[in-house]
Image (cartoon, rainbow, N blue to C red; front, side, top):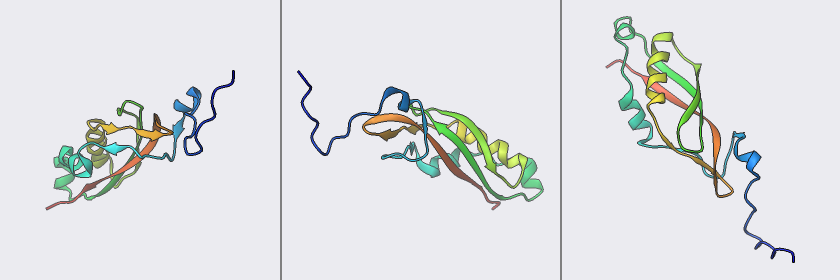
Length: 119
């Protein structure tokens, strides 16, 4: 016998091969645990950058895995290498709640800004 039809508002789960694909957009975006504020608290401003007055925003791209871990970290835009290194360290120390597509955790490409402001 054929399985009963799905209710109209229930989509079937994605095929297993789609779960391993890296998604650009999902129904529920990944959530940075601790938020951007938590990420900023993990940033250590490089002393050398401080001495030369370097400020700006580093944009870090990566993939949020199905378990909330981070892989494929890359600096997309940065005012300088010193700030890039500090931003990447802070991002690597972060964890996420994974993105969800059709009720399943999936891999999602994500970008965060890491701001460096001298005070």
